[in-house]
Length: 273
Picture (cartoon, rainbow, N blue to C red):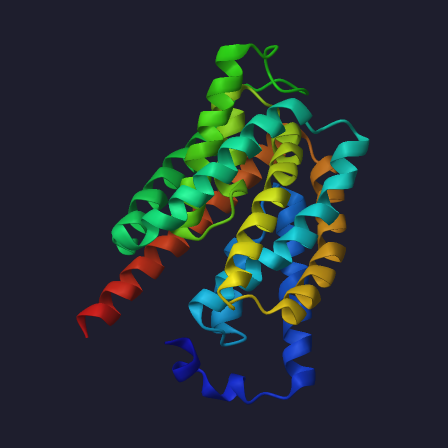
């Protein structure tokens, strides 16, 4: 679809495409470090619209780039102890299983309806975050017990399914969920989200690579640029007060929701044509 609409980009000089890829990676890295997301919400549309990749290749290459992007944004959160390692393990265990299941469900559910439902969910969450949430200043809520571990794993499972089916980064779901449902502070939710995203992205990228979709050289370029942006974004995030960061994240979710709604309407118009 996109290569046909943007043929000039497919013929663009290698140097220009590299500059565009570097710029795209930096933007994705900034968002990753600032909000604790993988950056796929920027990388996927950027790869299709700016670099004219086919949709499947864009998703696969984005996941491969996210490995470096998220990993680079993580260390500042670790140094300030804004990562909950135990809960991250429970979330990751569920997310890996969910991503595997979601990949099998993707072709059975109308993508447009899923985007619309997910966008509406994000709108509700964004409104709640912008209005303010009384979350603790640090840490990951109450001490874990068996019920809490199970709830975290279940939430990770749901996150993995939604991420695989919708093709979005897990951080968009993980961060508000950890704040609203589990009492994480905004900073700890973002740091923990980045830790969960790394193994999830590795699993997804390797699975897509088996199908020949992943463009590793482009992913490395995006990841290196994203690593620089991720460092800067995480420093900005840790310098902001939790309440201000929370509201800023709510605005970001609002923008993501509106983009998903616009995308679903655009796909409906294309299908009807």
